[in-house]
Image 1 (cartoon, rainbow, N blue to C red):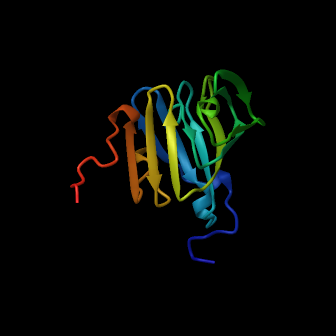
Image 2 (image 1 turned 120 degrees about the vertical axis):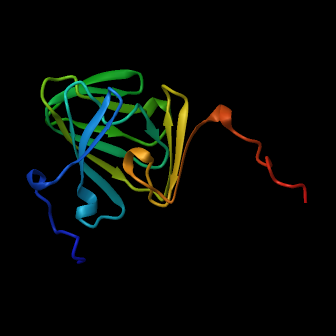
Image 3 (image 1 turned 180 degrees about the horizontal axis):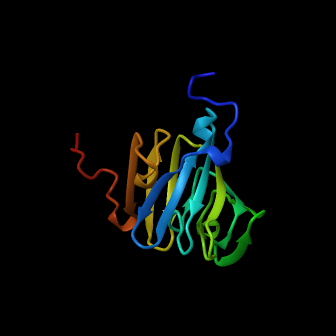
Length: 170
């Protein structure tokens, strides 16, 4: 085992990394899977303050996600439905289209704490149905929200180019 890889982690001992953007997005995250040396499975310990969410409404095309609510309560927007969730609930977010888009909000008065677990793909496409955006990420990378990657692009379909745009006619 490498020096940085642990056989186990104790959630209470994890140091969280603060994240915030604008008025709605705020979380404190600790990379659990990385500490355990996992390469095909992602896992993060996430704390979301009251009235906040960790990320926009989205759906992945290559990575399944699962959330285990450890404490607090919130609203889980999944497709066209909003579900009230609380400690002990397990939430699924399969790959697919807008019908599987999801977002977890803390609508309670105490921190919402959960484990976010995901499969890992070398390349992923993420759609944001509310804004018409999409993100393409490769190299085990993430968007700016999650750090640097080998390649990441966020855009909208209407900004697309023709396949041969800019290529000389050879």
